[in-house]
Each structure stands twice: as structure tokens, then as C-alpha cells.
Length: 84
Image (tube, rainbow, N blue to C red; front, side):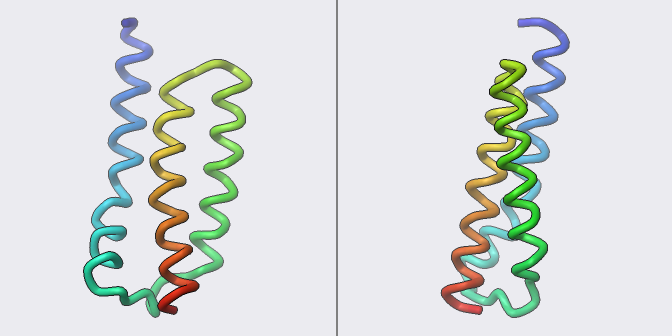
């Protein structure tokens, strides 16, 4: 594994996990009234584009990190629609 890949994977893990505290809080409380549906929908769209970009250039750190972030983001969008 190259230094470039290690740095990329580390960045992907940190960025993907940065949303976990918010996801966990929403999961426990079911409260989403303070969260912006527009912001999380826009973020989800951007993450989809990052995943497509990662696939095009063949970089697993970009694909994996953004896929995890997208899963978290979509969970928040789902909960916002369901409990908002």
C-alpha cells in the first residue's frame, strides 16, 4: 500500500465517520427538526458525484469514504422525512 493510498484512506475514514455522532443522535432521539433537509439532500447529491468520480478514476479511498458518508447522509434524510 502506497503512502498516497494510506493518506487517502485515512482521510476517507475520518470524513466518513465525522457524521456518525449526528446519525447516532438522530437514531436515539428521532429528533430532526433542527436539521436542514435541503443541506443533507445537497450533501447526498455531492457524495454521489464523488463516488462516480472515484469510480471513473479508480480510487478506492474516494469511493469507500464517500459511500459511507452517503449512507449516513441518506439515513438522516430518511429520518428527517419520517420524523421531521
